[in-house]
Image (cartoon, rainbow, N blue to C red; front, side):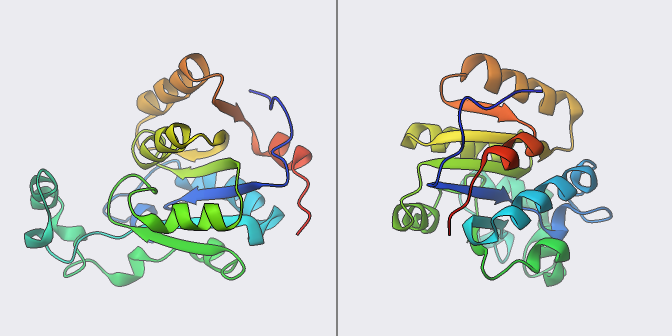
Length: 202
């Protein structure tokens, strides 16, 4: 397991990606690792709920609303469009939802959590310098969000045991990529190490 270079510092937030019913067991996009990663994500959230942002992926209302290659995507996954999916599946899983508020929820319709202005506005308002990232999937929404965060200049800490994917092979490949190719900008560490070094003042 990796270790942190330094404490996350007072200007860190925990960014938990898409721990929703859509990805829970039995759901259309069930992510097998979610049940294993969720307790670790909960530990991070409980450590600093007021410094936690929980994102939700919200599909388009129907496939006609989709643009470009997203049209083909929702041709395949029409069952998750808002006209068809059980709306309860779009909600955060209940153990995380109980932290809202003080945790903040930010929604979007694409892989990257920075795809609209809401997340960036929140980070600017709270003078954030470091993002501690958990959630799923390691090789889809987490990947898109982490690379955008790096481009923006944030220090990124991946909570390795609080990440989940539907593909073991892709998850392992991405962790390897993060540690080998982005070692100056992305750190990978277990939740216990992050919590032990993250002192939260507010």
